[in-house]
Length: 298
Image 1 (cartoon, rainbow, N blue to C red):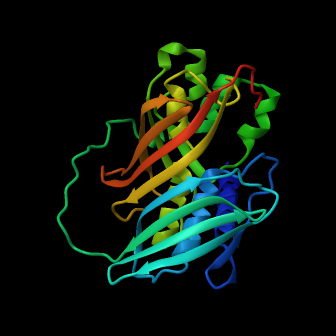
Image 2: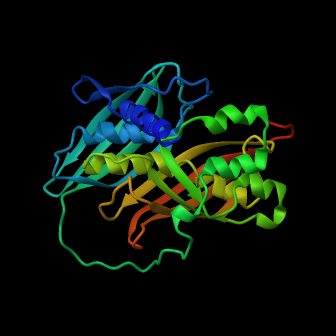
C-alpha cells in the first residue's frame, strides 16, 4: 500500500509544480478524476505556490487569508495571477486571484517574513492522545463502517498522498451512533513519503491537508456525514498562521473544534502540533452547510 500512496504523493507534488506562463502568472491543473469541483485545499496550495514563486527565498510565509468564491472546474486549468502588493525590509505581501472561465474562483492574501529573534511563549498545550503508530489508517476505519458496499470500495482503495490516523470518531460513525457526537476532532496527519528540504513545500502541503477535516468537525457535532446525510457544504473562507518551521512528512497532530454553527454556516478552528508538542500552525475556516429536504447521494 505504501508504494501506491507514494505515487499519489508524487502526483500531488506534480500538481503543485505550476507552469509559469508570464511574469507573475501561473497555470495549474487538477487530478484526472470525475468529481464535480476542485478540492479547496488544492486551490489554496497552488495559490500559495504561485505567491511563493515571486518572493525572495530568505522569507517564509507566516499567514494566509483566503476566500472561496466559485466552485472550481476540474476539467480545465486554473490561472493564478499574483499581485506584488508590498516588498518591505522585513515583510512581503502578495495577493493571488485564481481564474477559470474568465471569472475569479478564489482569492488569497499571503504574507512572508524574514526570520527574526523575538519574545516567545506557547500558552496552549497539545492534547494527550495515542501515538499515530497505534492507530489504524483512515481507510481501515471507514471500511469497518461501510463494509463491502461496492459503491465505497473503489474510493477506499484509491491511494492518498496524506496519511490520516483519526483519534476521534469519524462523521460516519457518529451518524450511526449519536453518543459519538462531538464538536472536537483530533487526527494525526503527514505526507506519506519523505520530502525535499524546501520550507515552502512543507507549508504548502499543510495548507493542502488543512482543508480535509475542518468542516467535518462541524458535521460531527450534529451526527451528519457526507454521503450519509442530506447535507450540502462548501468552504467559504480559510485563514492560516504558520508559527514555527516544521516538516509535513513528520507526524502533526491536527486538533480541531467547532465553537459555533448557525444560519447555514459553521465555524471550525484547528491547531497543528509536532510530536514534541510545539504549536506550528493555527487554522480557522467558515463553511456553508445546508441540510436539504431530500437525500443527497454521494
